[in-house]
Image 1 (cartoon, rainbow, N blue to C red):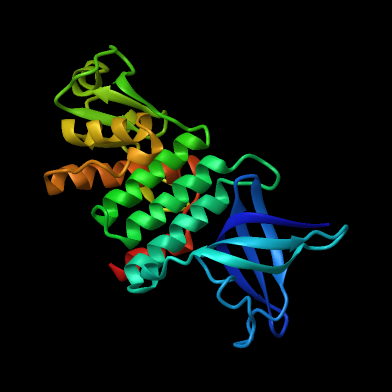
Image 2 (cartoon, rainbow, N blue to C red):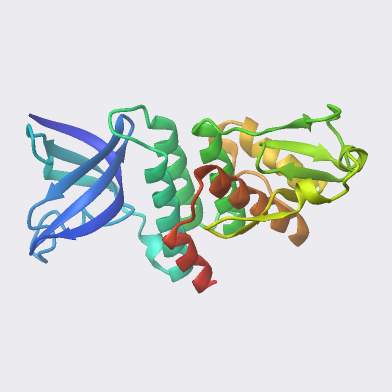
Length: 265
């Protein structure tokens, strides 16, 4: 069966002597497909089967075998992502997360749209790169069913506090007054924890600006999540930490591409 589909190339692997195996994210799910001869410089599909390419793919689906890409055309190649290693490795991490959160034959329209918007934001320097990364992480977690409740303190229900902590494990916020009222301060229940991926803190401190940023990313229209600014470095630092801690905690593992990204910055 031959069909066409728009999709984003998330991952590219060499296969055999001259072929490529690519992972394509479409609105209707993730597809793993072979591209015969795509590694040849003369191949018409050499550009179509590069990472970060958003294109229209002609796919031949065969019973009992991997689909293969018969042809297609590019819609957006995101050349700017290849201008520096920081952008390239962050884009790779973004695509790895998108691949983790998508599946075959399921609705992936939201994560596809988020990923495309994020790649564009990185390429065009729309906001500081750590802000783009954290906004993607929080929104991706929400799309996947892990939206945290950050509208009010999980204990007393207050919405506006000067000092707040993001309870990463429970997906909630705790005001400083309630934390002290539990009789622990930052005691045993909320001390640092360790796992086999990396060191993480259960609680991430937030100031009003970083908390407002998290709320904006989670509850605004997806097209708006990169439309705000954080005035202070401290605001950005807290926001960036909250996004990464929350996503990696709920996925339960890290990413090699994230380690590479950090090795380059």
